[in-house]
Image 1 (cartoon, rainbow, N blue to C red):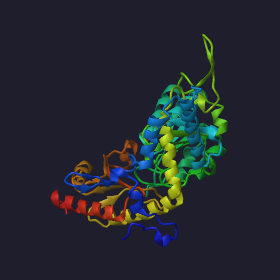
Image 2 (cartoon, protein in one colour):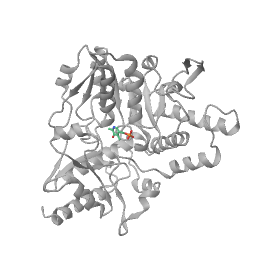
Image 3 (cartoon, rainbow, N blue to C red):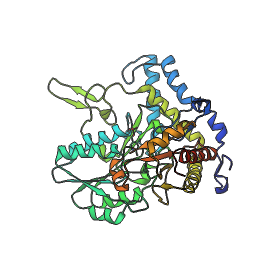
Image 4 (spheres, helix red, strand yellow):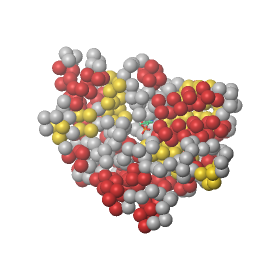
Length: 420
Ligand SMILES: *Cc1c(COP(=O)(O)O)cnc(C)c1O
């Protein structure tokens, strides 16, 4: 199969070989001169050259602090930093760039909501709903928040295919529910959750909705207005951007309800000896010098994705994911976790008789990077009845040939370890 599996669907095909040339890291060989096969994209994505260039251009040409200096460099840095806020707003369909708060990533964004909104709005007896497929980043902040506020955590369970049990969701949703926290796309099962429908039900009883978009923003076109949620978090480093820059989108009405997150420079209006007044959002939530270079480079990453077209990226990755599921499921002794009809590019699996860590070390010798472990989702591992899984996660620069290479490497591992 060629590297353009989306031809049959009629969408604009991606020229994957041309795209791969934009990623210097994909040109290298690892171990005994093996071409790198990077299938750990759900952990972090690789970066195109223009993102790397954006970082060095900032440091070589206009490094200065933002929002403070009234000089040439400071004005350039501020203008470019603020231009990314507008770009992010457009990219996720937010419209109003004043609702885009820059953070270090998904984890910090969710902690921001838990502290700044949770501390202001939650009381003893209130309930927070999370789902059985959440990343620890969308569990721990709510456990901490519950402990602090005397609130209670409730769980939405999964059906055998790895989708959420929506009937049981309706049972746990009640007049004490203040917040529903859910992932858009699972980093383990791949499941794409019906966020808009679930948010609609939460809103009907007056609860707010926070969405972990770490796996959806790199995979499909996202529109926060259409999802009609209250908070939406994602990490730039999973979308081709650098580490250290992410986003917390916050609905206008919610912004007004929130206390500060961290205190310090940039987030104040006026400071008296005993108290202070706050800057307007989003600056109220961006204390201290931000990751200026990383945010500007995130802007370059989003431009790159816009250039490819998120519809085309999505179509290509969907076809590639289907190919990976079919190829791996056809291997003897391989079991795939999750068979949701609508899904993202994370494919988790077990190989009978092989520990995930042994398997990932084995395929690494062939230059193939996959992930093994609990994938930051121990409550989900318990529900699946396993301590760990193996995961191949795909991006638009991966090819069917790379998936074939993974399948061949798994077969060799089975022979090597005497299970197949
Ligand atoms: C990666 C990931 C996170 C955490 O993102 P950070 O960039 O480490 O903050 C949270 N949720 C999901 C679903 C993820 O895949």
